[in-house]
Amino acid sequence: MISKTLFLLSESFKALFRNKIHTIISGITISIAILFINIIIFTYQSFKTISYKYKSNFVVDIFYDENIHEKKAKEIHQSISLIEGLREKEFIDKNKASVIFKKYFDEEVEAFLGENPLPLSSKFRINEGYRDLEKINLMINRIIILDGVDDVSYENNMIKKIEEISESVILLIALIGSFFVLISILLVSNTIRLIIDSKKETIRIFELLGATKMFVKVPFLIEGMLQGLIGSFISIFILFSVDLMVGYFFSNLISLGIFNVLYILFNVFVGLVMGFIGSSRVISKYL
Image 1: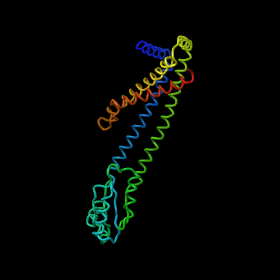
Image 2: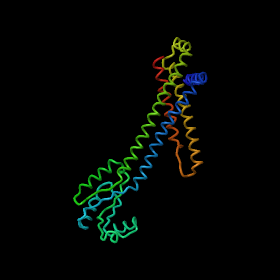
Image 3: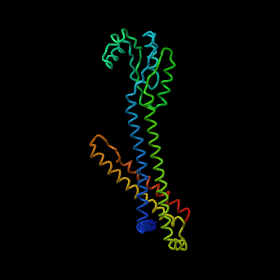
Image 4: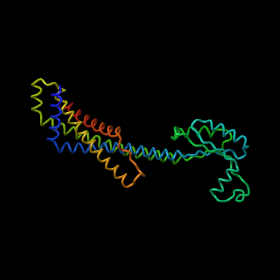
C-alpha cells in the first residue's frame, strides 16, 4: 500500500516537472482567482466594519405633536422604550431642546424667535443585533403610528447608501473572481489533458497489467491538486507581502489581519478544490 502511494506521488511530481510552463501558468491563474476570493472577503469585512461603526452612533429622533402635554409625551416615550432593539433612551423637554439649539446655533431660541416653539422629543440608539436597514425600518414603522408621535428622523439614506455600495462592490469583485476561477479550472484541465496525452502508452500498459481505473486516475487527480496547492501558496505569499507593506507604511493604523491558521488553511483548501475540479473535469472525458 505504501509503495503504491509513493509511486502515485512520484508520478504526479514527475508529470508536473515535465510540464513546467503549463503548471506555472495554471498555478498563477489559480492564485489570481484565490486573491479575488480573498478580496471579496476583505471587502465584505471592511464594509461591515464601516457600517457597524456608523450605525453604532446611529440615533433615532422622535418628535411629538406640537400641542401634546409633557406628561403624555413621557408616557409615549416609556412605551417606545419597551420596543425590542432600542437602548439608551433620552427624553428631551423644551428646556433641553433650548440648550441643544444654543449649542448648535450659539443663540437662545427665545431671544431669536421670541418664544420656545421647539417640540418635545426623544432620542434612542439601536442595539447591535438590530442595525440593518430592514429591522430599523420595522421599528420606525411601529413608532410612527403611535398616537402623539409627529415625526421620526433617522439617517435612512446614508445607511441605504452604505449597503448599496457594499453590495455593488462585492458583486463586481465576485464577477471578476468567478471569471478567473473558470479560467483556472480550464487551464488545470488543459494541463492534465496534455499530461494524459503524453502518457497514453504508459496508461495502456497499466491497463493491460490489470491496473484499476482508480489507480490510473489518482496520479492525475493529485497533479491537479498540486497545481491548486502551488496557486494557494503564491496567493498566500502575495497576501503576506501586502500585509507587511501595509503594516510598514501605515504602522498600527491599519491591519489586514490576514495571517492566522484558519485563514491559511482556507486558502490552501480553495486551491486544492479548484485543482481537484479541474483535473476531475478532464479525467472524466479522457479516462
